[in-house]
Image (cartoon, helix red, strand yellow):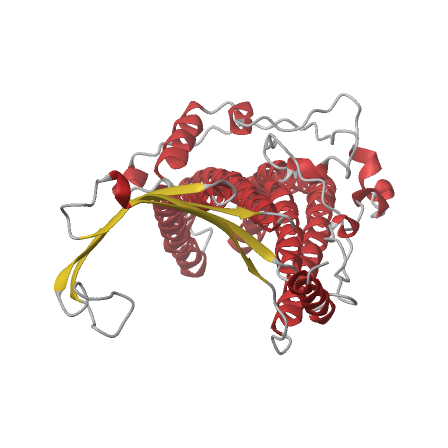
Length: 489
């Protein structure tokens, strides 16, 4: 072997032995298996083999055409949803940029520089010491030989971020739809409260007329008359507060649709139906991973973080670029396109880190930490998703029991009020007794209206907890142990 070759081989071995090492650096976090989260006893009473996951347009099951129209407007006009879509477009564009870096690049370049050539530089006389143009017309070719998978990993990380952004669009859609449904149900509750208060107001006016008659007949004093009269403005104040809340709810609905507050004025009384049946599909919690867009988005972030680790590890190894060019070069424009002015060249460009004061190891440690953060955020999101489902079920069970007891209590209070009013008309009871029983009836009616609205709200909450009809086209397969390692130095 010739001496220069021996020197190059020895120098190469010395360089490789001195290169930075990624030994001892690895992520610490692991993804939680959904099936290992104990939820069977909590969810089992509601799980049915015939139950299905929510549809993408789940709100149509409520049977309210006006709600359907409002949903269409909100999903088309919401600024929050358009913002999420813009972020998706950005993520897809960055993925396209990362994809392009995996392929060769060819540029057409034309340079013409008029300059004065030194008599003591590379250009000999007579050109040296004169002024002329230095011209170049060429195709330049470059290609990074991705031996360690850096460009591929960069592309896969960008795809993961784009998939996360895609899931975030669906999450934004779900949050807007459920928020609109919640406020719409709130408006329905306020209409019911308005009905109750208006009925109470009519009833109190009738009692005021009766009290006046009793005072005229000498059966009651002005004390009872003042009590009956004071009850009317109190009910009117309650009615004004309810109508204020209705205006505010309409404003919120209009904002969710991306419209001005005048749009809310056109919203008529909601007619949301309600199905008392409540059931969960089987294979919960395992399928919840793919059914909730926030969980899916976090899984894609974990996938992207894993690929970023691969990118950081590739930085420890030689970077090899293949460079080439072909074209024409000449001093002066007259000879630029002559055959004798042809230029061409090809060759590799190699770089290898030798001493970087720990920059590469610190960068890899940061990427490992990014993976750990993304993995633990995924774990927390998954736990929170199961809690959300369990919360909706617990709330529904409690609401069913409370509504049953409130209805029984209302029936008794209504009978008590009927008897109190009858006794008052016959002069056997005073007006205070009627007011006390009336407040009890009013309280029960309001509670029942609130509980019925809460049942509908819980139904929407369960739909949100189950992902609202989301189903990703593709799913990541990343686990903490799947982070690829490049070949050891």
